[in-house]
Length: 589
Image (cartoon, rainbow, N blue to C red; front, side):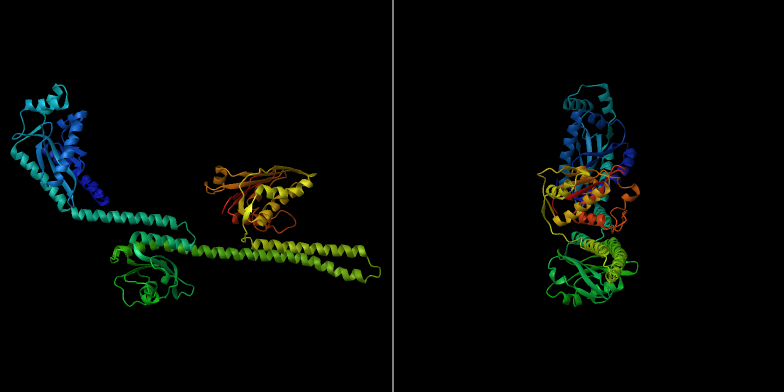
């Protein structure tokens, strides 16, 4: 027998659930064992008097195997004949099996057995001899007593039972078309709900407009199988729709599509906020806008939040050539809900980021103006002092040299401030090439080793580790800043430790990086006072500094460079025992 489709399997389960309750009533009303078999002859359910002959025989391995073979053979027979099968089973006991069908596919059978049919059954001794011989068991009082409880049906009673089972099966067959259609619709609805749930869960975590558009169109293509699907968004003027993303066949004519609000079928959807289906489309303005591309049928649904229209989702021309139907419109409309929310969240997120960026640069501008203003004020004082020194009859070269030196120092400080702001603003510019981290740190540590009278430098820089694809200048800035901070923290001397290792799975997991990526870890630790707990959460923030000088951008730039390389940085030291910066950088992009 061919395997059942998913809709027939679901329908079969529903039929068996319904029959289970019905057969229980029939079994006790007739005082007969009534059994329900599936399409392969397996027993699904049985109802009726306890300790019947079949239950006893099924307790014996040979009896169970024999009944299964009998059931399978009978089901094969029932595939051809629609009438009930009435005959003696292999043990000489009577059985009635009536076929159950859904859309002419045999799904199982209702059976009444074992019984004795007075017109067909052999006498008691012959039946007992047949059973004992077939099963290979010993004659026992229990077996005899059990078989004596087998129900004996007269020809008239047998006819009534057959008629009842036939009417039951015909009733199921007559309603099978409606049942299958209902079940198919339920399965389709379940699939749609599952898809919508998955869509809402996934889209809800996305903040990129491109990714959100791609995801909804993938679902539309998977479910409706159109020639193409596309999504247009309302532009800033609120007067037209602009193509955001198109997938499918012959997409090039659609990539620059612009549709005015109210223009044609798609524009009307955006203007009215109502979804539409139009099969056999003719004379629509969009057909002219896409030139050689063919649009015959369209289903279009608006994307909206409250009263605000965000855009329109469109599918055109099914690959099968069929028309779009109401369920297609309903499906896209259901997808449009979570998509609209995700797009609105993405818009709000972009506005938040833009606002935060403006506030950040306002802060940067303020900090720059403040620090440069202070430096200019000092420089102005030194420059004002110079004419006075030069005008004195006895030129004080020492005082003049001191003023010039201070003016130069102030100028250098201003240059440093300006350079730090330049670095911060251009931190997204990388020029990657293979870099040996052990070699780079060895080179950066040379000046420290030469001045090791104050610090003890411990290096664990093994050769042979994989090179990483990175910007060497930016890496020098990263580790140069960390090394400078470490030495400045050890005012009275201490130990500086540099170590490079391959990242372990635990470290990758701790840094929330993919476990299948190769990465290199760099440790820079000192034995200074460490970082107070209240400062740990702020050390990578812009303008945060505990020194009297500096912009507070050093570690902010370090983190920006590290993350731009796809890496992570954390400070793991303990207050009072020194700072410990761990930088993890992927080997490849």
